Length: 159
Image (cartoon, rainbow, N blue to C red):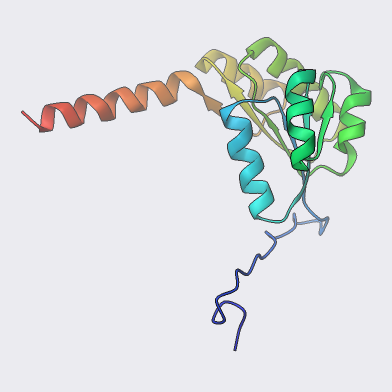
């Protein structure tokens, strides 16, 4: 009888990158997006480190067993402590485009092969994040536009 058939949860690790390295994710910034990313990474059984600047947040999260370090991810030594050399993925989640852009650029310089996902407020910021090395962007302006379209469509269909 398989573990799944016995009612046990089977956690399979996501495939390693094409070069065979084990996955390691760096998550930068705290907030709702951060929580979502960390939960997904933990559920997948992937190695990770979170970088956070706020000591209050750090102290609140450490007792829960999260792999979290304090520091500014724009600084190479902080990215090194988080494992940038072995990182396969970097998620930059804070809502400050200028800082996000600096982190994307620094992470790309230190790891040319990591997949970098950046949060940006406007399409122009997303374009700049791509120029600096982000592979993918999540743009607040586009998410809001999509949700407004959904909401108005739902409202209009109920008239």
